[in-house]
Length: 500
Ligand code: UDP
Image (cartoon, rainbow, N blue to C red; front, side, top):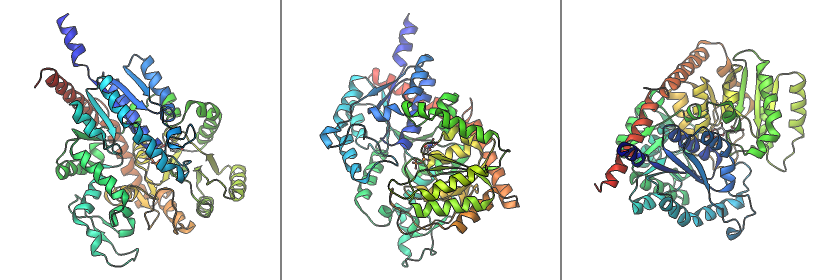
Protein backbone atom coordinates (compact mmCIF):
# COMPACT_ATOMS: atom_id res chain seq x y z
CA UNK A 1 0.00 0.00 0.00
CA UNK A 2 2.70 2.37 1.14
CA UNK A 3 4.80 1.96 -2.02
CA UNK A 4 1.73 2.41 -4.29
CA UNK A 5 1.05 5.67 -2.53
CA UNK A 6 4.63 6.81 -3.07
CA UNK A 7 4.32 6.00 -6.77
CA UNK A 8 1.22 8.18 -7.10
CA UNK A 9 2.99 11.00 -5.32
CA UNK A 10 6.03 11.06 -7.56
CA UNK A 11 4.12 11.00 -10.85
CA UNK A 12 4.57 14.49 -12.18
CA UNK A 13 1.95 16.65 -13.86
CA UNK A 14 3.42 18.72 -16.65
CA UNK A 15 1.49 21.39 -18.57
CA UNK A 16 2.56 22.31 -22.07
CA UNK A 17 1.72 25.66 -23.63
CA UNK A 18 2.46 25.86 -27.36
CA UNK A 19 2.58 29.19 -29.18
CA UNK A 20 -0.21 29.88 -31.67
CA UNK A 21 1.52 29.01 -34.92
CA UNK A 22 1.60 25.63 -36.63
CA UNK A 23 5.36 25.27 -36.65
CA UNK A 24 5.62 26.06 -32.93
CA UNK A 25 2.67 23.83 -32.06
CA UNK A 26 4.08 20.79 -33.89
CA UNK A 27 7.31 20.23 -31.89
CA UNK A 28 5.74 21.24 -28.57
CA UNK A 29 2.97 18.69 -29.01
CA UNK A 30 5.47 16.03 -30.07
CA UNK A 31 7.49 16.71 -26.90
CA UNK A 32 4.34 16.63 -24.75
CA UNK A 33 3.42 13.27 -26.26
CA UNK A 34 6.93 11.96 -25.55
CA UNK A 35 6.58 12.95 -21.91
CA UNK A 36 3.25 11.07 -21.76
CA UNK A 37 4.83 8.03 -23.43
CA UNK A 38 7.33 8.02 -20.57
CA UNK A 39 4.83 8.00 -17.75
CA UNK A 40 4.25 11.72 -17.16
CA UNK A 41 0.74 13.12 -16.68
CA UNK A 42 0.42 15.64 -19.51
CA UNK A 43 -2.00 18.48 -20.24
CA UNK A 44 -1.62 20.61 -23.35
CA UNK A 45 -3.28 24.01 -23.11
CA UNK A 46 -4.50 25.46 -26.41
CA UNK A 47 -7.23 27.55 -28.01
CA UNK A 48 -9.77 25.69 -30.18
CA UNK A 49 -8.10 26.18 -33.56
CA UNK A 50 -4.65 25.26 -32.24
CA UNK A 51 -6.11 22.22 -30.47
CA UNK A 52 -7.81 21.03 -33.66
CA UNK A 53 -4.36 20.63 -35.27
CA UNK A 54 -3.26 17.90 -32.89
CA UNK A 55 -6.33 16.57 -31.10
CA UNK A 56 -6.49 13.32 -33.06
CA UNK A 57 -2.95 12.32 -32.03
CA UNK A 58 -3.62 13.18 -28.40
CA UNK A 59 -6.87 11.18 -28.55
CA UNK A 60 -5.03 8.18 -29.98
CA UNK A 61 -2.34 8.39 -27.27
CA UNK A 62 -4.99 8.62 -24.58
CA UNK A 63 -6.84 5.58 -25.95
CA UNK A 64 -3.54 3.69 -25.65
CA UNK A 65 -3.71 4.36 -21.92
CA UNK A 66 -1.32 7.31 -21.78
CA UNK A 67 -2.10 10.05 -19.35
CA UNK A 68 -2.53 12.93 -21.80
CA UNK A 69 -5.29 15.41 -22.64
CA UNK A 70 -5.88 18.82 -24.17
CA UNK A 71 -7.36 21.63 -22.11
CA UNK A 72 -9.07 24.05 -24.48
CA UNK A 73 -9.33 27.72 -23.56
CA UNK A 74 -11.65 29.96 -25.54
CA UNK A 75 -9.90 32.55 -27.67
CA UNK A 76 -11.33 36.03 -26.95
CA UNK A 77 -12.08 36.78 -30.62
CA UNK A 78 -14.91 39.27 -30.03
CA UNK A 79 -12.92 41.21 -27.41
CA UNK A 80 -10.12 41.93 -29.89
CA UNK A 81 -12.32 42.39 -32.96
CA UNK A 82 -11.49 39.17 -34.80
CA UNK A 83 -13.86 36.79 -36.54
CA UNK A 84 -14.33 33.48 -34.76
CA UNK A 85 -11.66 30.99 -35.84
CA UNK A 86 -8.85 33.47 -36.47
CA UNK A 87 -6.47 32.81 -33.59
CA UNK A 88 -3.25 31.35 -35.00
CA UNK A 89 -0.40 32.62 -37.17
CA UNK A 90 0.12 30.86 -40.50
CA UNK A 91 0.48 31.47 -44.24
CA UNK A 92 -3.18 32.55 -44.45
CA UNK A 93 -3.13 35.08 -41.62
CA UNK A 94 -3.81 38.59 -42.95
CA UNK A 95 -1.21 41.13 -41.75
CA UNK A 96 -3.81 43.39 -40.10
CA UNK A 97 -4.93 40.47 -37.93
CA UNK A 98 -1.50 39.82 -36.42
CA UNK A 99 -1.59 42.42 -33.62
CA UNK A 100 -5.14 41.43 -32.75
CA UNK A 101 -4.19 37.79 -32.37
CA UNK A 102 -1.28 38.88 -30.19
CA UNK A 103 -3.65 40.96 -28.06
CA UNK A 104 -6.06 38.04 -27.73
CA UNK A 105 -3.25 35.79 -26.53
CA UNK A 106 -2.19 38.41 -23.98
CA UNK A 107 -5.75 38.52 -22.63
CA UNK A 108 -5.51 34.80 -21.84
CA UNK A 109 -2.48 35.09 -19.55
CA UNK A 110 -4.33 35.30 -16.23
CA UNK A 111 -6.70 32.45 -17.13
CA UNK A 112 -3.78 30.24 -18.13
CA UNK A 113 -1.82 31.05 -14.99
CA UNK A 114 -4.90 30.11 -12.94
CA UNK A 115 -5.08 26.84 -14.87
CA UNK A 116 -1.49 25.97 -13.99
CA UNK A 117 -2.52 26.33 -10.36
CA UNK A 118 -5.94 24.63 -10.54
CA UNK A 119 -4.57 21.66 -12.47
CA UNK A 120 -1.70 21.42 -9.97
CA UNK A 121 1.15 21.59 -12.45
CA UNK A 122 4.48 20.34 -11.13
CA UNK A 123 6.26 21.88 -14.09
CA UNK A 124 5.35 23.94 -17.14
CA UNK A 125 6.92 23.66 -20.59
CA UNK A 126 6.11 26.80 -22.53
CA UNK A 127 7.04 28.33 -25.85
CA UNK A 128 9.78 30.96 -25.97
CA UNK A 129 7.16 33.49 -27.13
CA UNK A 130 5.49 33.36 -23.71
CA UNK A 131 8.14 35.00 -21.52
CA UNK A 132 5.48 35.88 -18.92
CA UNK A 133 5.22 32.22 -17.97
CA UNK A 134 8.56 32.32 -16.15
CA UNK A 135 7.03 34.70 -13.59
CA UNK A 136 3.87 32.60 -13.36
CA UNK A 137 6.01 29.55 -12.58
CA UNK A 138 8.00 31.50 -9.98
CA UNK A 139 4.78 32.59 -8.25
CA UNK A 140 3.65 28.95 -8.12
CA UNK A 141 7.05 27.71 -7.00
CA UNK A 142 7.40 25.29 -9.92
CA UNK A 143 10.02 24.98 -12.68
CA UNK A 144 9.47 26.42 -16.12
CA UNK A 145 11.16 24.86 -19.13
CA UNK A 146 11.39 27.00 -22.23
CA UNK A 147 11.08 25.39 -25.66
CA UNK A 148 13.51 27.24 -27.89
CA UNK A 149 12.35 27.09 -31.49
CA UNK A 150 15.12 26.58 -34.01
CA UNK A 151 18.56 25.05 -33.86
CA UNK A 152 20.89 25.42 -30.93
CA UNK A 153 23.35 26.67 -33.53
CA UNK A 154 21.00 29.57 -34.35
CA UNK A 155 20.66 30.52 -30.68
CA UNK A 156 24.44 30.34 -30.30
CA UNK A 157 24.89 32.56 -33.36
CA UNK A 158 22.32 35.04 -32.07
CA UNK A 159 24.15 35.15 -28.79
CA UNK A 160 27.44 35.75 -30.61
CA UNK A 161 26.03 38.65 -32.64
CA UNK A 162 24.33 40.19 -29.58
CA UNK A 163 27.52 39.93 -27.54
CA UNK A 164 30.13 41.04 -30.06
CA UNK A 165 28.14 42.96 -32.73
CA UNK A 166 30.62 41.81 -35.41
CA UNK A 167 28.40 43.12 -38.21
CA UNK A 168 29.11 46.68 -37.07
CA UNK A 169 32.63 46.36 -38.52
CA UNK A 170 31.18 46.20 -42.02
CA UNK A 171 30.43 49.69 -43.17
CA UNK A 172 29.29 49.06 -46.73
CA UNK A 173 25.85 47.89 -47.91
CA UNK A 174 27.49 45.35 -50.19
CA UNK A 175 25.91 41.91 -50.14
CA UNK A 176 29.40 40.38 -50.42
CA UNK A 177 31.29 41.82 -47.42
CA UNK A 178 31.24 39.26 -44.66
CA UNK A 179 31.95 39.21 -40.94
CA UNK A 180 32.85 36.20 -38.77
CA UNK A 181 30.69 34.97 -35.91
CA UNK A 182 33.02 35.23 -32.88
CA UNK A 183 33.28 32.63 -30.16
CA UNK A 184 31.61 29.75 -31.99
CA UNK A 185 33.11 26.27 -32.48
CA UNK A 186 33.32 26.81 -36.27
CA UNK A 187 34.66 29.85 -38.08
CA UNK A 188 31.61 30.96 -40.04
CA UNK A 189 30.93 34.05 -42.07
CA UNK A 190 27.80 35.96 -42.99
CA UNK A 191 26.83 39.32 -44.45
CA UNK A 192 24.98 41.93 -42.38
CA UNK A 193 21.94 41.67 -44.65
CA UNK A 194 21.54 38.01 -43.74
CA UNK A 195 20.91 38.98 -40.12
CA UNK A 196 17.41 39.63 -38.84
CA UNK A 197 16.67 43.37 -38.98
CA UNK A 198 16.07 43.55 -35.21
CA UNK A 199 19.59 42.28 -34.66
CA UNK A 200 21.16 44.77 -37.07
CA UNK A 201 19.45 47.77 -35.45
CA UNK A 202 17.14 47.72 -32.41
CA UNK A 203 13.39 47.85 -33.11
CA UNK A 204 10.21 46.74 -31.32
CA UNK A 205 11.03 43.10 -31.92
CA UNK A 206 14.46 43.53 -30.29
CA UNK A 207 12.68 44.33 -27.04
CA UNK A 208 10.56 41.17 -27.27
CA UNK A 209 13.66 39.07 -28.00
CA UNK A 210 15.37 40.58 -24.95
CA UNK A 211 12.39 39.67 -22.80
CA UNK A 212 12.59 36.13 -24.17
CA UNK A 213 16.31 35.88 -23.42
CA UNK A 214 15.77 37.23 -19.92
CA UNK A 215 12.98 34.72 -19.31
CA UNK A 216 15.22 31.95 -20.64
CA UNK A 217 17.94 32.87 -18.12
CA UNK A 218 15.40 32.73 -15.32
CA UNK A 219 13.87 29.43 -16.47
CA UNK A 220 14.80 26.06 -14.98
CA UNK A 221 16.26 25.13 -18.35
CA UNK A 222 15.66 24.99 -22.06
CA UNK A 223 14.68 22.20 -24.41
CA UNK A 224 15.55 21.85 -28.08
CA UNK A 225 14.27 19.67 -30.87
CA UNK A 226 17.79 18.60 -31.78
CA UNK A 227 20.25 15.86 -30.94
CA UNK A 228 23.79 15.68 -29.72
CA UNK A 229 25.30 13.99 -32.78
CA UNK A 230 23.91 16.78 -34.98
CA UNK A 231 25.07 19.87 -33.11
CA UNK A 232 26.65 18.65 -29.87
CA UNK A 233 29.40 21.27 -30.00
CA UNK A 234 26.75 23.97 -30.07
CA UNK A 235 24.66 22.36 -27.34
CA UNK A 236 27.77 22.40 -25.11
CA UNK A 237 28.77 25.88 -26.22
CA UNK A 238 25.30 27.30 -25.59
CA UNK A 239 25.01 25.89 -22.09
CA UNK A 240 28.29 27.52 -21.24
CA UNK A 241 27.55 30.82 -22.95
CA UNK A 242 24.12 31.19 -21.33
CA UNK A 243 24.94 29.51 -18.03
CA UNK A 244 21.69 27.54 -18.21
CA UNK A 245 20.70 23.89 -18.30
CA UNK A 246 19.39 22.48 -21.55
CA UNK A 247 18.23 19.20 -23.00
CA UNK A 248 18.15 18.13 -26.64
CA UNK A 249 15.24 15.74 -27.18
CA UNK A 250 15.05 15.26 -30.94
CA UNK A 251 14.28 14.39 -33.56
CA UNK A 252 10.87 14.61 -31.92
CA UNK A 253 8.99 14.14 -35.21
CA UNK A 254 10.27 10.60 -35.67
CA UNK A 255 10.14 9.68 -32.01
CA UNK A 256 6.59 10.83 -31.31
CA UNK A 257 5.00 9.99 -34.66
CA UNK A 258 5.56 6.32 -35.23
CA UNK A 259 1.98 5.61 -36.22
CA UNK A 260 1.03 6.27 -39.90
CA UNK A 261 -2.11 8.16 -38.82
CA UNK A 262 -0.01 10.51 -36.68
CA UNK A 263 2.34 11.16 -39.58
CA UNK A 264 -0.49 11.78 -42.03
CA UNK A 265 -2.45 14.10 -39.79
CA UNK A 266 0.40 16.09 -38.24
CA UNK A 267 -0.23 19.81 -38.34
CA UNK A 268 -3.67 19.80 -39.90
CA UNK A 269 -7.18 19.85 -38.45
CA UNK A 270 -9.27 16.72 -38.62
CA UNK A 271 -11.92 18.27 -40.84
CA UNK A 272 -9.32 19.34 -43.38
CA UNK A 273 -7.75 15.91 -43.20
CA UNK A 274 -10.99 14.24 -44.26
CA UNK A 275 -11.15 16.16 -47.50
CA UNK A 276 -7.46 15.63 -48.10
CA UNK A 277 -7.13 11.92 -47.58
CA UNK A 278 -7.65 11.16 -51.24
CA UNK A 279 -5.26 13.85 -52.36
CA UNK A 280 -2.59 12.68 -49.90
CA UNK A 281 -2.82 9.12 -51.07
CA UNK A 282 -2.58 10.45 -54.64
CA UNK A 283 0.75 12.12 -53.94
CA UNK A 284 2.08 9.03 -52.16
CA UNK A 285 0.96 6.77 -55.00
CA UNK A 286 2.79 9.03 -57.42
CA UNK A 287 5.96 8.77 -55.30
CA UNK A 288 5.65 5.00 -55.16
CA UNK A 289 5.73 4.93 -58.96
CA UNK A 290 9.12 6.68 -59.00
CA UNK A 291 12.61 5.18 -58.63
CA UNK A 292 14.56 5.57 -55.39
CA UNK A 293 16.19 8.95 -54.75
CA UNK A 294 14.85 10.39 -57.99
CA UNK A 295 12.36 13.02 -56.82
CA UNK A 296 13.15 16.50 -55.57
CA UNK A 297 10.77 17.76 -52.88
CA UNK A 298 10.21 21.52 -52.69
CA UNK A 299 8.53 23.15 -49.72
CA UNK A 300 8.71 26.46 -47.90
CA UNK A 301 6.98 25.57 -44.65
CA UNK A 302 3.70 26.58 -43.10
CA UNK A 303 4.11 30.34 -42.94
CA UNK A 304 4.94 31.62 -46.42
CA UNK A 305 3.34 32.30 -49.75
CA UNK A 306 5.49 33.57 -52.59
CA UNK A 307 4.43 36.27 -55.03
CA UNK A 308 3.83 35.12 -58.63
CA UNK A 309 7.12 36.53 -59.91
CA UNK A 310 9.02 34.16 -57.65
CA UNK A 311 6.75 31.19 -58.37
CA UNK A 312 7.45 31.57 -62.08
CA UNK A 313 11.22 31.36 -61.47
CA UNK A 314 10.82 28.25 -59.33
CA UNK A 315 8.55 26.57 -61.87
CA UNK A 316 10.98 27.20 -64.72
CA UNK A 317 13.96 25.99 -62.71
CA UNK A 318 12.12 22.79 -61.78
CA UNK A 319 11.01 22.11 -65.33
CA UNK A 320 14.50 22.79 -66.71
CA UNK A 321 16.20 20.64 -64.06
CA UNK A 322 15.13 17.42 -65.74
CA UNK A 323 14.47 15.85 -62.32
CA UNK A 324 11.08 14.65 -61.18
CA UNK A 325 9.73 16.91 -58.48
CA UNK A 326 6.99 17.36 -55.91
CA UNK A 327 6.27 20.98 -55.09
CA UNK A 328 4.08 22.25 -52.26
CA UNK A 329 2.65 25.49 -53.64
CA UNK A 330 1.16 28.19 -51.52
CA UNK A 331 0.00 30.99 -53.79
CA UNK A 332 -0.89 34.49 -52.63
CA UNK A 333 -4.60 35.27 -52.88
CA UNK A 334 -5.57 37.64 -55.64
CA UNK A 335 -2.48 36.96 -57.78
CA UNK A 336 -2.79 35.57 -61.27
CA UNK A 337 -2.40 31.81 -61.10
CA UNK A 338 -2.88 31.00 -64.80
CA UNK A 339 0.84 30.42 -65.36
CA UNK A 340 0.85 27.79 -62.63
CA UNK A 341 -2.29 26.12 -63.93
CA UNK A 342 -0.68 25.70 -67.34
CA UNK A 343 2.52 24.52 -65.69
CA UNK A 344 0.67 21.95 -63.64
CA UNK A 345 -1.14 20.59 -66.72
CA UNK A 346 2.16 20.26 -68.54
CA UNK A 347 4.09 18.49 -65.81
CA UNK A 348 1.15 16.22 -65.09
CA UNK A 349 0.98 15.21 -68.74
CA UNK A 350 4.72 14.49 -68.82
CA UNK A 351 4.50 12.80 -65.39
CA UNK A 352 7.55 14.84 -64.33
CA UNK A 353 6.01 16.81 -61.53
CA UNK A 354 3.35 16.74 -58.82
CA UNK A 355 1.97 19.94 -57.29
CA UNK A 356 0.39 19.94 -53.86
CA UNK A 357 -1.77 22.98 -53.27
CA UNK A 358 -1.85 23.86 -49.61
CA UNK A 359 -0.90 21.34 -46.96
CA UNK A 360 1.33 18.33 -47.71
CA UNK A 361 1.70 15.19 -45.56
CA UNK A 362 5.37 16.08 -45.20
CA UNK A 363 6.53 13.35 -42.84
CA UNK A 364 5.16 10.66 -45.15
CA UNK A 365 6.66 12.32 -48.21
CA UNK A 366 10.13 12.76 -46.72
CA UNK A 367 10.38 9.17 -45.60
CA UNK A 368 9.37 7.87 -49.04
CA UNK A 369 12.41 6.25 -50.71
CA UNK A 370 11.66 8.08 -53.99
CA UNK A 371 12.66 11.41 -52.45
CA UNK A 372 16.27 12.24 -53.26
CA UNK A 373 16.62 15.79 -51.92
CA UNK A 374 14.72 18.81 -50.70
CA UNK A 375 14.64 22.52 -51.43
CA UNK A 376 13.82 24.10 -48.08
CA UNK A 377 13.47 27.51 -46.47
CA UNK A 378 15.47 26.10 -43.53
CA UNK A 379 12.58 26.16 -41.05
CA UNK A 380 13.96 24.07 -38.20
CA UNK A 381 11.15 21.49 -38.15
CA UNK A 382 11.72 20.77 -41.83
CA UNK A 383 15.47 20.62 -41.32
CA UNK A 384 15.10 18.07 -38.51
CA UNK A 385 12.62 16.04 -40.54
CA UNK A 386 14.98 16.05 -43.55
CA UNK A 387 17.99 15.08 -41.44
CA UNK A 388 15.92 12.30 -39.99
CA UNK A 389 15.07 11.12 -43.50
CA UNK A 390 18.74 11.30 -44.53
CA UNK A 391 18.21 14.02 -47.15
CA UNK A 392 20.65 16.68 -48.24
CA UNK A 393 19.11 20.11 -48.74
CA UNK A 394 19.17 23.07 -51.10
CA UNK A 395 18.84 25.97 -48.69
CA UNK A 396 16.63 29.00 -49.34
CA UNK A 397 16.29 30.88 -46.06
CA UNK A 398 13.81 33.72 -45.73
CA UNK A 399 12.99 34.98 -42.25
CA UNK A 400 13.37 34.29 -38.50
CA UNK A 401 16.57 32.35 -37.73
CA UNK A 402 16.64 30.57 -41.09
CA UNK A 403 19.89 32.14 -42.35
CA UNK A 404 21.68 30.77 -39.30
CA UNK A 405 20.24 27.32 -39.99
CA UNK A 406 21.58 27.62 -43.52
CA UNK A 407 25.08 28.27 -42.13
CA UNK A 408 24.84 25.16 -40.00
CA UNK A 409 23.73 23.00 -42.93
CA UNK A 410 26.02 24.36 -45.62
CA UNK A 411 29.21 25.36 -43.80
CA UNK A 412 29.31 23.36 -40.58
CA UNK A 413 27.56 20.05 -41.37
CA UNK A 414 28.11 20.20 -45.13
CA UNK A 415 24.80 18.60 -45.96
CA UNK A 416 23.36 21.62 -47.73
CA UNK A 417 23.95 23.64 -50.85
CA UNK A 418 22.99 27.31 -50.71
CA UNK A 419 20.62 28.62 -53.38
CA UNK A 420 22.28 31.96 -52.67
CA UNK A 421 19.62 34.15 -51.07
CA UNK A 422 21.18 37.44 -50.08
CA UNK A 423 18.73 39.19 -47.84
CA UNK A 424 16.80 38.38 -44.66
CA UNK A 425 13.26 39.73 -44.65
CA UNK A 426 10.35 39.99 -42.31
CA UNK A 427 7.84 37.18 -42.31
CA UNK A 428 5.20 37.76 -45.04
CA UNK A 429 7.28 40.47 -46.72
CA UNK A 430 9.13 39.66 -49.88
CA UNK A 431 11.17 42.77 -50.52
CA UNK A 432 12.90 43.28 -53.83
CA UNK A 433 14.92 40.11 -54.14
CA UNK A 434 13.69 37.58 -56.67
CA UNK A 435 15.78 34.42 -56.72
CA UNK A 436 16.44 33.69 -60.38
CA UNK A 437 15.85 30.36 -62.08
CA UNK A 438 19.54 29.92 -62.98
CA UNK A 439 20.53 30.27 -59.35
CA UNK A 440 17.88 27.75 -58.31
CA UNK A 441 18.86 25.36 -61.10
CA UNK A 442 22.52 25.44 -60.07
CA UNK A 443 21.70 24.45 -56.50
CA UNK A 444 19.33 21.68 -57.67
CA UNK A 445 21.99 20.30 -60.01
CA UNK A 446 24.49 20.08 -57.16
CA UNK A 447 21.96 18.64 -54.73
CA UNK A 448 20.74 15.89 -57.06
CA UNK A 449 23.93 15.40 -59.10
CA UNK A 450 26.41 12.56 -59.24
CA UNK A 451 29.67 14.46 -58.81
CA UNK A 452 31.91 13.72 -55.82
CA UNK A 453 30.73 16.75 -53.85
CA UNK A 454 27.07 15.78 -54.26
CA UNK A 455 27.63 12.14 -53.42
CA UNK A 456 29.63 13.07 -50.30
CA UNK A 457 26.97 15.51 -49.16
CA UNK A 458 24.28 12.85 -49.43
CA UNK A 459 26.50 10.32 -47.66
CA UNK A 460 26.92 12.70 -44.72
CA UNK A 461 23.15 13.28 -44.64
CA UNK A 462 22.53 9.52 -44.46
CA UNK A 463 25.06 9.17 -41.64
CA UNK A 464 23.24 11.83 -39.66
CA UNK A 465 19.98 10.02 -40.27
CA UNK A 466 21.46 6.88 -38.73
CA UNK A 467 22.70 8.93 -35.79
CA UNK A 468 19.22 10.46 -35.41
CA UNK A 469 17.67 7.02 -35.17
CA UNK A 470 20.20 5.97 -32.54
CA UNK A 471 19.64 9.17 -30.54
CA UNK A 472 16.04 8.29 -29.75
CA UNK A 473 16.62 4.61 -28.95
CA UNK A 474 17.16 3.42 -25.38
CA UNK A 475 20.67 4.56 -24.38
CA UNK A 476 20.80 7.15 -27.19
CA UNK A 477 21.58 10.80 -26.43
CA UNK A 478 18.04 12.23 -26.70
CA UNK A 479 16.47 9.20 -25.04
CA UNK A 480 18.86 9.49 -22.09
CA UNK A 481 18.23 13.25 -21.88
CA UNK A 482 14.47 12.77 -21.73
CA UNK A 483 14.66 10.13 -18.98
CA UNK A 484 17.13 12.22 -17.03
CA UNK A 485 14.98 15.35 -17.37
CA UNK A 486 11.86 13.54 -16.18
CA UNK A 487 13.77 12.09 -13.23
CA UNK A 488 15.07 15.52 -12.32
CA UNK A 489 11.55 16.96 -12.42
CA UNK A 490 10.33 14.11 -10.22
CA UNK A 491 12.97 14.77 -7.61
CA UNK A 492 12.17 18.49 -7.70
CA UNK A 493 8.57 17.57 -6.94
CA UNK A 494 9.65 15.38 -4.05
CA UNK A 495 11.80 18.19 -2.69
CA UNK A 496 8.82 20.50 -2.89
CA UNK A 497 6.55 18.01 -1.10
CA UNK A 498 9.19 17.52 1.57
CA UNK A 499 9.57 21.28 1.93
CA UNK A 500 13.22 21.31 0.93
N1 UDP B 1 4.38 21.10 -42.93
C1 UDP B 1 3.62 20.08 -43.45
N2 UDP B 1 3.01 20.29 -44.63
C2 UDP B 1 3.12 21.46 -45.33
C3 UDP B 1 3.93 22.48 -44.78
C4 UDP B 1 4.54 22.27 -43.59
O1 UDP B 1 3.49 19.00 -42.85
O2 UDP B 1 2.55 21.58 -46.40
C5 UDP B 1 5.02 20.90 -41.62
C6 UDP B 1 6.45 20.49 -41.74
O3 UDP B 1 6.57 19.09 -41.78
C7 UDP B 1 7.06 21.11 -40.50
C8 UDP B 1 6.22 22.35 -40.25
O4 UDP B 1 5.02 22.14 -40.94
O5 UDP B 1 6.90 20.25 -39.41
C9 UDP B 1 6.87 23.61 -40.78
O6 UDP B 1 7.81 24.05 -39.85
P1 UDP B 1 9.17 24.71 -40.26
O7 UDP B 1 9.91 24.99 -38.99
O8 UDP B 1 9.87 23.85 -41.22
O9 UDP B 1 8.82 26.03 -41.04
P2 UDP B 1 7.79 27.26 -40.78
O10 UDP B 1 6.45 26.73 -41.03
O11 UDP B 1 8.01 27.73 -39.37
O12 UDP B 1 8.21 28.28 -41.76
